[in-house]
Length: 222
Image (cartoon, rainbow, N blue to C red; front, side):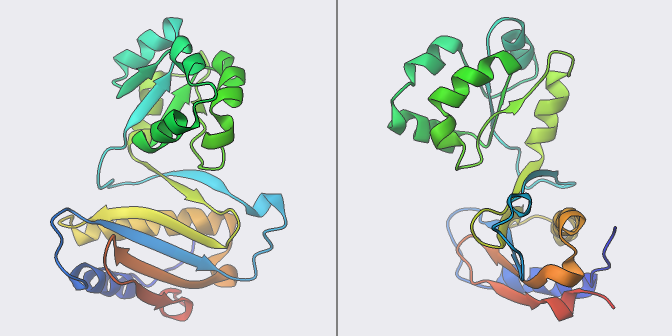
């Protein structure tokens, strides 16, 4: 069910967030923080981990493929940023430092079903808690379409606190595009948790900027 949101309020808060804070020597991201209330996180179904495709991604995500055989060829043709072979996976076993570095290096990973048992043993203990386990691509699915979707996607995740943090834009990006990205993320959250019931507040901020608060009563149209 869709939710009506006050676009004028969101637009003004985006503008305020972009102006706030000191100039930096790098292009800062624009982040959305959604704080929910009265959410029982003792229930596993409330600990969500979703991928949301943005209409206007601020940058293309980096994708790596755990691959071998035909899947390796298809992943290369799909334009992934890196291929990690079976031998390379096995060489990572027990090397926590290298696995952590790999998790930081790429935004998303893909893999064929037959590599998942090995990946679960080798990288699972570190990738799992970070939400970096590979997306499984079955043999009958077009690898290129999966890669293109992941290039545009952000992860919407709730674990131990009822807070969601998502990159929704960047400095210099059209504010209408940032607004569209925010609306897309909020609509996806609303599919799982009714914002009229669970939303406490929203913040919009640059990477190094102060958070600009939006109360639920301001953003939820009546």
